[in-house]
Image 1 (cartoon, helix red, strand yellow):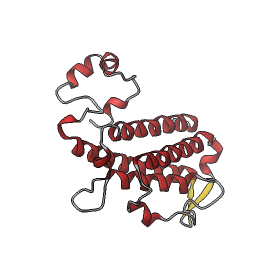
Image 2 (cartoon, rainbow, N blue to C red):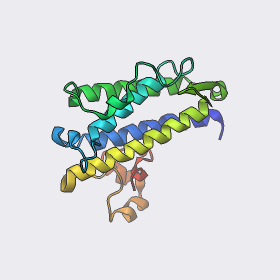
Image 3 (cartoon, rainbow, N blue to C red):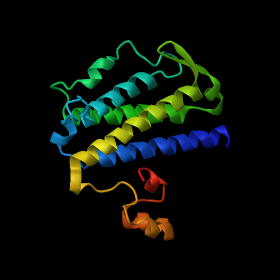
Image 4 (cartoon, rainbow, N blue to C red):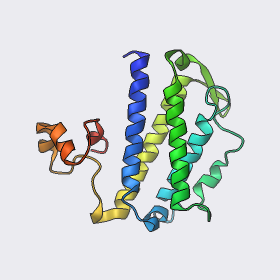
Length: 191
């Protein structure tokens, strides 16, 4: 696989990750969005707030400044304040993803070997991007699991439903079409 294919694949996978998280969060009530799991302080809202803060810090001036900006207050990302409404978090989430996707889309093959820093640690662009996609995939998994727990029986699967694998395998395109999805590989995302 050449670098151009990698950059195209990266953008597609990032978009798929965002779609999974959005699909999960769209099924939750405001109450569920802010509900802490087992007193841990972890809620859908804190995961969204943390990812958004990370994206704004890492991807602003990605090639020219340290990925941990002085303006970021990471510890506050795990605390819910009065300004943290669903709409406020959604706005930060959308702008964080937009910044991330715009930055990744602007990268060229030659950029992949450039050096950037995150918390003073030098990394190639390729290493930094891979590090972040792994981080975001971990948190999107949390979002899906937390949302599914909150929704219970009302959960609408984001993947091939249990007991429907044979039907999917017969004709993936028709199966996804019946769910209102396109054939993008998203069906196996949470299988």
